[in-house]
Amino acid sequence: MTGCTKVSAGCDHCYAATVAVTKTRDAYLRQRPVKDTAANRADPFAPRFWDQRLEQPLRWREPRRIFVNSMSDVFHAHFSAEMIHRVFDVMAMARWHQFQVLTKRPERALRLSGRLPWPPNVWMGTSIENMDVARRADSLRQIPAAVRFISAEPLLGPLADLDLTGIDWVIGGGESGGRARPCQPEWARDLRDRCLGRGVAFFWKQWGGRTPKAGGRTLDGRVWDEYPVALSAVAE
Ligand code: SF4
Image (tube, rainbow, N blue to C red; front, top):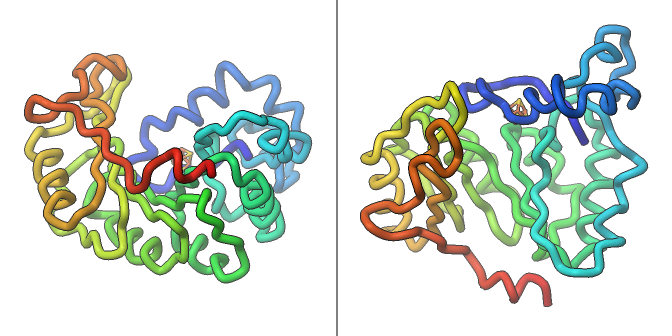
């Protein structure tokens, strides 16, 4: 899947949107969009479903951790329930890989969740960049995934009132790039402490800045690299 529509502040500097109109523009324009209108055919960031690539993970014999996905949102309204089902079927078949599905549309994920397979190698997450979208966690915690995670990246505000019930893992990080919005250390510290207090695994990816590595990734003198389950256990 490629292409999407911006839905909240975390989308403002969307990497997928930038890549779609630069590096991969010509390749995307050659693929028919899901909603086949003249406007979408001319828009490299209109949602596209790449049938021909769907079974690629089945051919990768070595176990991999696969992000689903970096160029789109699986639960965007243009993708039919059948398309989403096909993606989940491949993930269920490719049980030696570990898939991390991340969406900003967990409400639709919840609506479809009863019809989708939830094997242990499929982790389900939602992005929560500030309290405006904290309600996404309410949908996520009702989805019967083996691991439910929150991506607080880019962290754009305090998440002091975020309910972590039913959440296994939180990944945080600051924004990077030329227009990166600053991340306050107290937001990160508070989020970490609330995870520690509730037994939620915490991973701090980066502080961000002009480049992803500009600010380093230590928080209070150490790296936070926690995972919800041993990764080796997933591939067995
Ligand atoms: S949901 Fe994700 S892929 Fe879609 S516009 Fe927002 S940041 Fe980009």
